[in-house]
Image 1 (cartoon, rainbow, N blue to C red):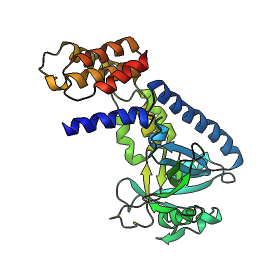
Image 2 (image 1 turned 180 degrees about the horizontal axis):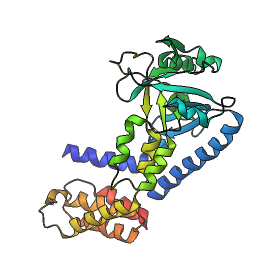
Image 3 (image 1 turned 90 degrees about the horizontal axis):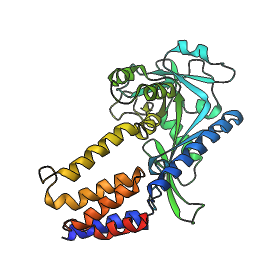
Image 4 (image 1 turned 120 degrees about the vertical axis):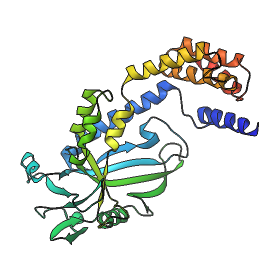
Length: 321
């Protein structure tokens, strides 16, 4: 019983106290982040400032009071190549080229070296010689970036810290990951493309492949060059996958609706009926079907209160009126 009470308190707290917001609000926040990033990337590519990409709950449209701010940064004029033949696509007067070498690294990790040995001073100061090649050390690069963020500490591939935010003067934690970008999909991950027969859709796969990947400053603990390796990051691909395929989502919602409406206790036990109607209502509300959501919430109230969610259900009904 105590667990049920705690569950309801957490549920109500997340929906009201910590302002998850209504589905429309979450969607608007997510779109604002997308538009802001697009505009900033257009501008920064011309003036030489680092490109940034939000991730985590902030990017997904949530505003939890205790969430940290996760941002990836990279210089637009550095490009990582998987094969030196790709260098013909870039002007060496505009771009500094980096070559990936994963021959001595565990899967998902690689060394990054400068084939032309030209780079900005801060990058060159983070380089070491490995097998005769001038490699960018992930540890040295991350440590240098940390010096530019007073009061920060190293947390995985990120520099982490706390500061008072501009909105509400609330102290916020942040994780900044300084990385490099490649416009090409890793050859070692090419099998993923071949596995995408039914999901995600072909146009999404093409978009992900064209977007390439990133390299964050952390090596494999058991790698031969643990202090100098970089980890391949698919954060951008993950973000594209999160917000796609509404038809498949609608089909899943239809199946859930049939199950909750017509199940006779075979798949949905009696003590889960109230929360099953509640989940169905939340999904319907998120898709904008408010009439169906109201019906589901009211059905939830008619069930025995096994999960103690009636207060939260009534609040959702009130929000829809």
